[in-house]
Length: 128
Image 1 (cartoon, helix red, strand yellow):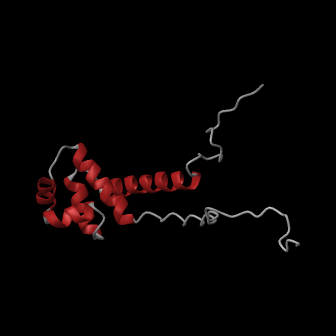
Image 2 (cartoon, one colour):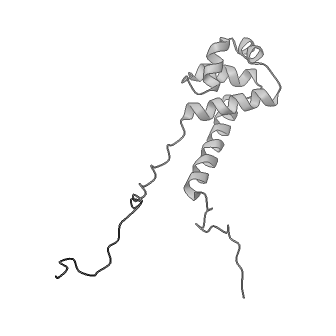
């Protein structure tokens, strides 16, 4: 009697092949209100002042200032100027610091986790 099945080896996959990795989504640009809020909060904490103290001096409600610091509200230029002044900053100082933060965050994202050169060694090189 002849065997109808050829003598070739058959491979039975026990695990499915891994799916190809999906491309990572483009990083989201930071929102201006998040940057400004971070600057306000950092400055307030650096001065060791309470939210209530700064809100009272700026004549802003404490919950509103909290939401501005957390990036939940888009504050008007008048509110930002009042909060900055209560912290001893000018509006230009506040905006300049927020701009600096934007540049820092976007530069870090553009260079990625491996640094500007794309090398995992951050510029280190061994020569033989």
